[in-house]
Structure formats: C-alpha cells, structure tokens
Length: 55
Image (cartoon, rainbow, N blue to C red; front, top):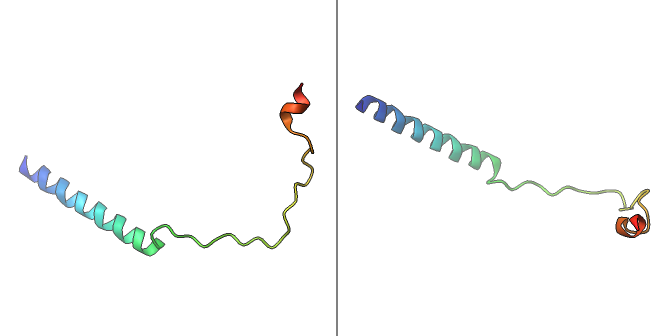
C-alpha cells in the first residue's frame, strides 16, 4: 500500500513540475495584444436597436 502512496506523490510532483515549466515557457499567460490595422466600422448592422425593432 505504501508503494501506491509513493507513486502518487511522485506523480503529483511531476505534474507540478510540468505545470510550472509550461507556465514559465508561456510567459505566465501574457499574450501580445492584437494589432488592428483597419478602421472600425459596424458594417451592415442596423442603426436602431433590436428591442425597438421588435415592438
């Protein structure tokens, strides 16, 4: 029974080490911002809200 406990502890340590390694390689979740090169437009959206058009 003790061997299963040891295997579980080793497995948890490996998972923890892999998680820390993945976080450090990923930059702790910091992604570069999305650059937009086109001007924003509403394209073909209606000029009135949906709730006003329903009634």
